Length: 82
Image 1 (cartoon, helix red, strand yellow):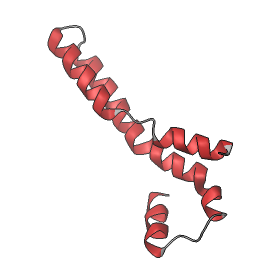
Image 2 (tube, one colour):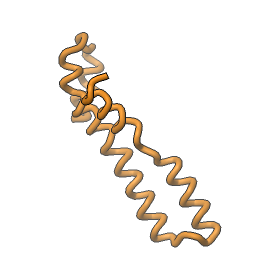
Image 3 (cartoon, helix red, strand yellow):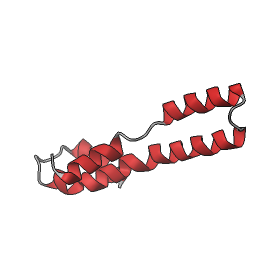
Image 4 (cartoon, helix red, strand yellow):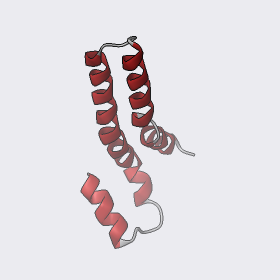
């Protein structure tokens, strides 16, 4: 796997919103974390869920150009993300 493919895979798989939600909910309920801290962590997790996959598609864009042609629905999906 090429470096750009590994970077794209890392970006697309690095979002952890459900884990962050679970941990912040438990920590807030147990009194170990303030609600404002939990909100900041959840906000950052939401941003990573929105941004990282788009960055992964952009990083991998040159790889897609050299592979088999995409169908029109795949092309529209990718162009919609960029």
